[in-house]
Amino acid sequence: MRNYKFTINGNNYDIVVNSIENNQAQIELNGTPITVELNQEVRTTKTPILTRKEIVNKEGDKREKFIPVKQDAKPSAKTIKSPLPGNVIKVLVKEGDVFKTDDVIMVLESMKMENNILAERSGTIVKVHISAGQSILQDAPLFDIE
Image (cartoon, rainbow, N blue to C red):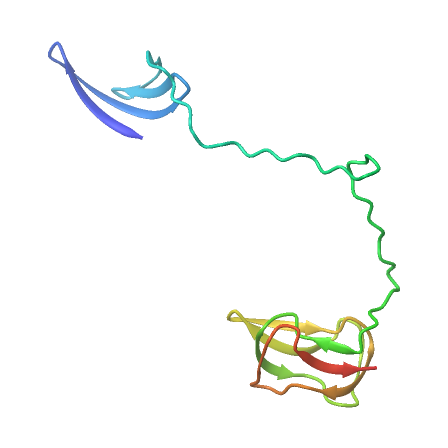
C-alpha cells in the first residue's frame, strides 16, 4: 500500500494505491475507492515455473502399486534401536520386564524436546544397552528383546 499527495490545478488529492494486478489498480482517491486502468505495459516475472512430469510405471499405470502390510505382522528385529540422536532422560524398563505394544519404554531428549519411545511389539527385555543421562546416536542399540 502506497500513499501519494498530488496538486493538480490548485486542487489537492490524497491517493492510496491498494493493489495492482495486470494493468488494473485499486486505489482510493480522497477516501473513495476507484479502479484505474494503467496505460503501460504489464511486466512479467522472470521466475521460472516448475513443472514435473507424471511418473508412469513400466506397465503404463500412473499410480504406484503398493502392497499394504498386514496388521498382525510384527517386526522381526531382536534389538530396539534409537530413532533419533539425543540424551536419555528416563529408562522405564529393566532386564526381565515384560512390555506390550505401544508401552512407553524410555524418554529421549532430542532437539530440546522430550520424545517417548514406544514398543513396536510385545516382548520381554533381555538386555538394556543404555542408562539415564547417556548421549546416543541415531540407530544406537537401546534394548535387546525376545
